[in-house]
Image 1 (cartoon, one colour):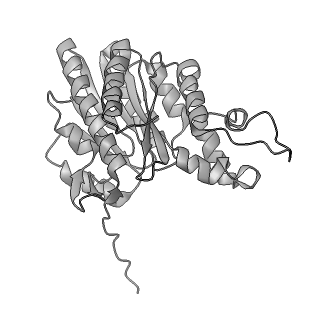
Image 2: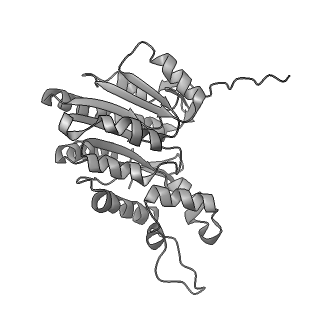
Image 3: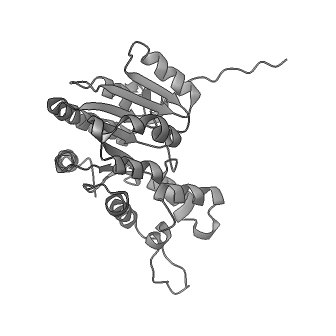
Length: 280
């Protein structure tokens, strides 16, 4: 009888752009928790694609804490933590790292369904509950229904990874030959097929082929959807996260209902732009 070897834990390797993102998230989480504590709101931290708790830095070759562990160190502290990942090995590691904390709730499975059924129902407006939710999928693995529900509840602020690299590679650059699965994922993320009207110029060229719009145009259209379709009142200009060659891998979006939240994030983004760490 062949015995199946248990899967080994492999920490995700991250580049400088991801370390920058972690720094941004940590700065805002600290400001957020400070304000919510002063106002007396019960506030939670939600990480829908939490990973194993640590990452491997490409820059140094060392293990660095991921967003959940950074959030656990925030002072004043969050009241509760909801951490989700699809990878069972990463989930086991998260549970080991947080075993001594009874306010940390770790879930294994599809974050789209877990957020809607297990997490968001605990963050109701009338109960004075609030949450900061990190939606950082590995690609097109997030459903628009999650984003829309977060806006509808009026209690949840989100940071969102808009995975333009995955979109380009698997859908937007491929046009007619994109796989059915990729198009389904794109539709689910966008919340319909209106991305087709956005992604390609309406004027065909000499060969009667519509040309793909720039990443900036597509990101701005999604920003407008967050405001007018989902219902977030405040969505600042997203931060383009670039690799060492200057290519945009994804846009880091923020969306909230309060103007103060937008101002804090705008100030954080602006500070990094002035230092030359964000371009565009």
